[in-house]
Amino acid sequence: MAKAQKSYICQSCGAVTSRWAGKCESCNEWNTIQEEQTEGSVPKGLGGKQKGNIIDFVDLKHDTSKIYPRLQTRIAEFDRVTGGGLVPGSAILIGGDPGIGKSTLLLQAVCALNANNVSCVYISGEESTDQIRMRANRLGLGDSSVKLASATNVRDILASVKSAPKSVQLLVIDSIQTMYIDSIDSAPGTVTQVRSSAQEIIRMAKNRNISVIFVGHVTKDGTIAGPRVLEHLVDTVMYFEGDRSHHFRILRAVKNRFGPTDEIGVFEMAEQGLIEVKNPSALFLSQRHEGVAGSAVLAALEGTRPLLVEVQALVAPSSLGTPRRAVLGWDHNRLAMIVAVLETRCSISLSSHDIFLNIAGGIRINEPAADLAVAAALISAISNVALPSDMVFFGEIGLAGEVRQVSQPELRLKESSKLGFERATIPQLNKKAAKKNSAIIVKEIIHIRELSESLVSIAAQ
Ligand SMILES: Nc1ncnc2c1ncn2[C@@H]1O[C@H](COP(=O)(O)OP(=O)(O)O)[C@@H](O)[C@H]1O
Ligand SMILES: [Mg+2]
Ligand SMILES: [Zn+2]
Image (tube, rainbow, N blue to C red):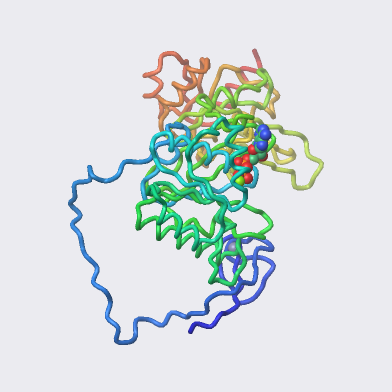
């Protein structure tokens, strides 16, 4: 029999170490390593006389029209992120900070699916069934026939799902960190429990073609295992993000075996639950003050969808030896690069200034196409000249200061003119797109220097 052993496991990434340490060597998080009891079975190779079972091989060629259709909630913002609905038999993880709205989102999603005749079971390890009912009433979903249970024992859950009178098509586990397998010694929420519970549930789900959605809380203090330890076990990983001080929430796919990974869904958290935001650009620009130096509008692209956001820069003389560079919603290293390019290629001195950069509204932008808008905001801030309020920017900047083309310029320009913008500064290499959109006056630039020169001429007017 395998002897139970003690190991030290990082609760954030699942790395195993032989000793306790304050900082995890593999993910660099602090205070995430905890002692756990594991089954101490060392893999022994395939020795012995026992023969393997025969696996049936099947042809690749197959009439795929019989494959089950995706489960669609018809909540467009949700379905888009899943790649057009949930694939039957797939495992999905939705991670996010506690209180961000994961349970609310999933309750709305299962009720919507149930209304489309998908039989759903919602199992909560955190709330009683009455608490879930109260939430459903508040969301106006009180008369849905979704099956609820409050349970945490995986063995019981598997048995109940298998023997449910109507075969289950979707199972929601809220949250995986409350689930446990009674034959494992570790406490619920440890890496061993979280991983084994998920594995057991996924195995059953794949056998029976049930889709499973796991909720995974993200905690910074490492007291419970983070969703990262599950990422490789599931087919799709989504994060539900947002700033508690803002009303909107973003559902973002970071891994998807059955769809694109850069899609986002935007929701607004209200008393009656999460409301889809059909026009996020209008939302993100709604609080923009026009005519302020340091503000530039970026025509970004999130997945297949264009998104206009405001880039705000503040440049102030620094009293520090090493001036501050603070960034919210964008990449810190990318800002350092843009600053270096502005200094070397455009002779704009920023080395004695603190720089603060913010993507307004609390959204995170990842694409290099933001470079030009960031550069415009910085030049505008340092020269104290407001950019034209009806102008958008997009373009990647290279180390030589060249402005490189970006993908989908047509979509970006179309969204801009839809929101009333009349001018755009874009890479010269994207000019073909500009020809197709006559509603917008496009200035094509080859080098970042042209941008700083045109701002100087605006200032002179
Ligand atoms: N009565 C209410 N009215 C409006 N919003 C509420 C109400 N109750 C809870 N909420 C919102 O729902 C959020 C909790 O969402 P929940 O789905 O439980 O989060 P999670 O499952 O991610 O921890 C709270 O942070 C709050 O913003
Ligand atoms: Mg919850
Ligand atoms: Zn780690």
